[in-house]
Image 1 (spheres, rainbow, N blue to C red):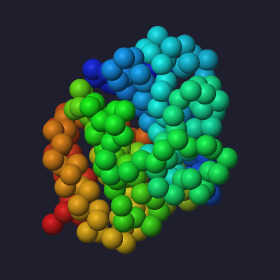
Image 2 (cartoon, rainbow, N blue to C red; image 1 turned 90 degrees about the vertical axis):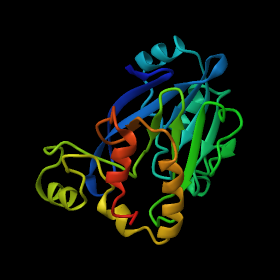
Image 3 (tube, helix red, strand yellow; image 1 turned 60 degrees about the vertical axis):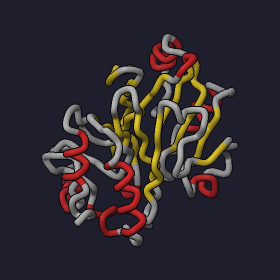
Image 4 (spheres, rainbow, N blue to C red; image 1 turned 180 degrees about the vertical axis):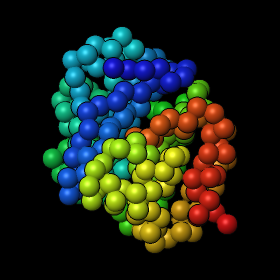
Length: 230
């Protein structure tokens, strides 16, 4: 079900998904209402009848965004449910999902259709994936997907819990996983993107896997990336 997070922005948590080697992750999408009742959906979760009913009360789904090449599992289902919606791909996803007819690519500047209300930055330089980070102006919310994560301490068991602890997924505060820190092959590009993010007047932070941050958002981002910024 949708939960309002601020003016014109909602979240919806979906069922966990299974990734490589049996690791399962919780899922969360972000929905933002633009002018004219147009809805922008970032990283869609599994689409249920209840979720469709709640969305219909808010407006029309016009834009679907896969913010990195790892978050695409439910995009095709949403496109079939909302055939007039435009679908936007992060770098690398077109090659990965040739079964989806994408309408555009997500880059280092917002598409004009949502630029008045949503800004964005492409965080380049990582070998695992390039991620687009959004900023919803009306709610002063930065929206990350995988670059910042946190899972409950008891989320995994056995050897997966050991790996997750090493990866910093079980820290008391959301942070950048160790695997992402290690795979930034172009840290200068990452720093440039982060400087743009730090220029936003961020008060709150959302992520696909982790507890939302509801205050002092810029301070939180500085802490999460202090390993990258001298």
